[in-house]
Length: 354
Ligand code: SAH
Image (cartoon, rainbow, N blue to C red; front, side, top):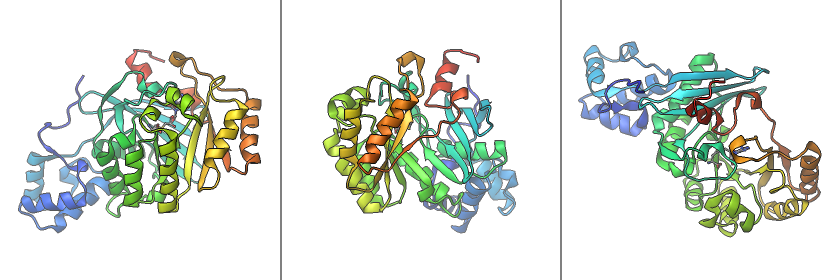
């Protein structure tokens, strides 16, 4: 099914950054400052109609109608958790694809969780996002639109972003960074990079590149196993970038940015919850700026993974604490609405109508 907003040949403005917008308006015969005006309309005010851009001359607006488009997403599904603090969306893209986004209402603000790809090609064993394979990268504009759509739909202001939806953001580096640069800019939503957490399964060259670019993003790394033998199975990309390369890259990221790296560890009963693994994990994470975030795995029936008992999770946590490692257990939100990890999209594709 196609929704089709405007022709595909038109220039999708939200895929550009300010410099590119300025260059483009000059090419259209306008003064450079119109680029910033345009950027504020699309990124800050989130308008979707050129006619609403009241400070642009009418002839320029009609030129824009012909040459450019302002993308938007449709809300295909919206699920609200019983507690009301988590809202899960299935967004429809212009080409008929669909991605998930989540709004989490915390006492410190509103967090949007965004997807960066349609599907994923990393193939982590316990993750629903990988179930249907990889289809394509999202554009910078499509990632941005997830935030705008949530804001509009809920009438709220997003203060924090987690790039933890479907897809591997560092496998779609350019578009993900352009999204981050736009949303953190004064012409965007002015969300500080410190309030943006990007999660990766561990693409080492991209982590190093990110450290060099010094955006000051918070980095989360999906570790899930403290030795190569186990991690090769759970997170296959480890065969390409083993722990001996990944951990030094994370340490260097922390050193270069001064930002504490978050090591994500999804606890899978019978797979990675043994006490000896907690000791190994402590060894990897001691002596540098990081903390461990334990995540009781969300059950993905297709994968046959289940979380350990509360007692066992606590025991695992205690071992880390004894080693002096800062450790938290992730607050579970939205489990009743499949808010985790690609489950909504996958169910939708299977035609499951719950
Ligand atoms: N590709 C990136 C971004 C996805 S973030 C990454 O791997 O980090 C989503 C986070 O949820 C990752 O830490 C991922 O490993 C984790 N995750 C995936 N499936 C899960 C599940 N069933 N239960 C709990 N966490 C899961």
